[in-house]
Each structure stands twice: as C-alpha cells, then as structure tokens.
Image (cartoon, rainbow, N blue to C red):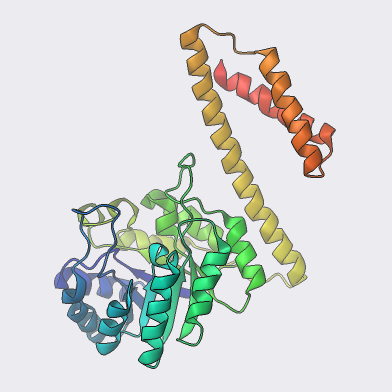
Length: 335
C-alpha cells in the first residue's frame, strides 16, 4: 500500500509485548507503530492502561525498530509526557474529541511545547461532523492533522461494533480534501473477521490509509481482544488489499459516485435492520396467535409513507412501490 499505515496493539501491556509487536509491525512493512498507554473505560475496574510506566517501552521499541511510534493523549498531561520523551505523533480518541474543553487543553499544551509532528483525530462517538471538525480546527497549527474514521455509536442492529456511516466520511472528504483521511477498521468491525472487508471498503472510497490493531496473541489481549489481528492475519490482510487508483475520470464524478456507494451501503444496512425487526414481530404474532397480514396496519403505514415522501420531494408512487416490495419480503420473513 502507498498510503499511511499504522498498526500495533490496542494497549501496551508489557515491555516484551510492545517490543514483539513493534518488530512484527516493522516486518510487515508498516512504518508507524501504535500502542495505547491510557485507556478510557466507561466503568471503573477494567484495564485502563499502564500509563506513564509504558513510555519507556515505546521509546525502546522506536530505538530497536526505527519505527515512528504513537499513543493516545486524552489530556494536556499526557501530551507533555509524550513530548518530553520524544513521542511526536499522538492521537485523540473519540471520547476526547467529543469534549471541546479537553481538546482545547491539549491544543494549548501542544502550542506551549512548540507543537508536534502529527496529530491523529478520531471522529466522535456521535455522527456529528461539526464536532469532529471543531476538534480539528482547535488543533490547527499544532502539527500535521490526520482525520481517522472509526465509525459511530449506533443502535447495534448491524454486524459492526460501530456503524461506519460511510456517507459521513465521504462528506468529510468532499468538504476538506486537504486533510488526510484514514480508516480504523478495527473499531468499526469489533471482530477481526470483519476487518478485511471494512479496510477494503475504505480504500475503495479513496481513504488515504489505515489504522489497524494487531497483537502477538489477540486472545490474551487485555483490551479489545476480539478485534485485534494476529501478525499472520495482518500480513495476509495487507497482501489482499487492493488500491483502485485513479481511473482518470472526472474527479467530481468520482466523488459523487463515492457518495452514492456510501449511501447504498447504509441503505442495505438499514433494510437488514428492518428485516430483523420484522422477524421479531413475526415471533410475537405467532405467540399471540395473530395473523401475519393485518390490513389496517398496512394501510396506516402506507399513509405515513406517502405523506413523508411528499415532504421529501419524492414521488408517492415510487415510494409506494418500494414499500410494497419491502412489505412482501417482511411477510416472507414472518412466515
């Protein structure tokens, strides 16, 4: 791959694990090693990282392998510790990006220290482009800004840990083409089996690189074990990925096609979620001895569909035809 590749474990767990991971990342041909030292957790009691004690491990890994290294900084204190130890690439996690006060404190700390080489800014948990852009704007002038798409917290009806909402990433790219955009397929997937398809999808949409979690022994990882790749899986993934390149067609047309592809992806996910709900409704009807088809309910749905279609500027007949197809498939799923 020609784009920026970042790989390494979710968390630094021991000096041996960090060094082993860094060597494996280097041998895979990747130039930037990642490992989290501070791991924010929703509730106390989980593994929250080794903290400052792991800084020396990252420094040793850099000296041993020649790789650039990076870690997550969630506050100004983390920034100062990193810069004092020569770690000049940091990333801001989703929860930090969602807090403008925390981002501003980090930006102030970076400016006071003269900035750093590179700042990776992940999208916030909510699908809020303004919040993501606000964090990036606060960090302007502190170092090279790289946006990282790691998906958004959704309803959990799809196969992924975080909903990719590709159309939002494409919209971000369209509005800010000068900012490199990476994909974090590990956090979107939630399981290692889904990482390859998400990584390839990102490249198909023109992303500038990938940030992938890998661990020497994923099943033994202290955090996010299900989504981390083994070294062999990482090498296999990199060998399979295809960069489509530029076909030479109109860039505006390519951008519009990318948006259309992203919307289609989201549309299929929504339909799959709808069918799952229909199957659940079918089970409830069976338990209650209710008929599958209830004409009154269907007429009510169609009235709402036609009304909403008019509000959105869609042809009512077109909307009706779509929902008639959906209804027929829904009935089939309830039988």
